[in-house]
Every structure is written in C-alpha cells, then in structure tokens.
Amino acid sequence: MATARINLTVDETAKEEALKLFEMFGMDASTAVNMFFKKVVQTKAIPFEISVADTPKKTTYDMSEDEFMSRVQSAIDNRKV
Image (cartoon, rainbow, N blue to C red; front, side, top):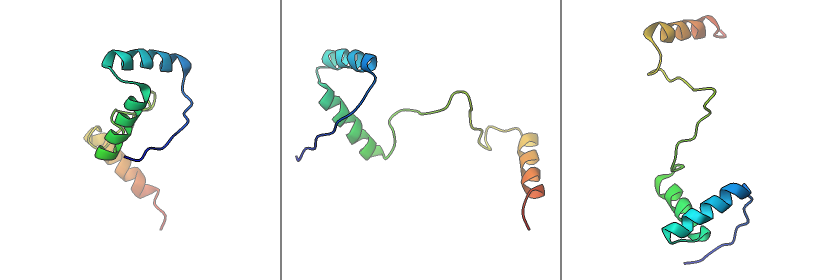
C-alpha cells in the first residue's frame, strides 16, 4: 500500500484528548485518520452528522401542509416571467 504524508492543524486540546482515546483503542493518530479516510471513501459521506444547530433547515417533510402551501404560493408570486 502506497502512503502519503499530510500535515494537519487541529485544536490542541481536542488532539490531546483524542490521542488518549486512540491509545485506549490500541491505535495511533495515523491509524485513526486512515480509518476516517477509508470510511469517507467507502460511504462517500462524512461518517457523522454535520449541522448548524442555530439554523435548522426544514425539508418539505418537516413542514405543515399550510407552511408548505404558503411557500409554494410565495414561489409562484415571486417567479420571474
């Protein structure tokens, strides 16, 4: 397996806490980062949820019927002809 070197900048406190956990898991940081990269490639996704807590994005499934219809009407009213 070919390897490549990368240089990362991370929060120092998070790094120290993570290194302690990696040691408890029996791995080093390189192994943990490799696991993360391989999971991203395997799933074509970040292996945990990422969100902006202050601005939850509603999907049509999260809206009430009235809210959905209001947004549809607003889109119709604001369309450019």
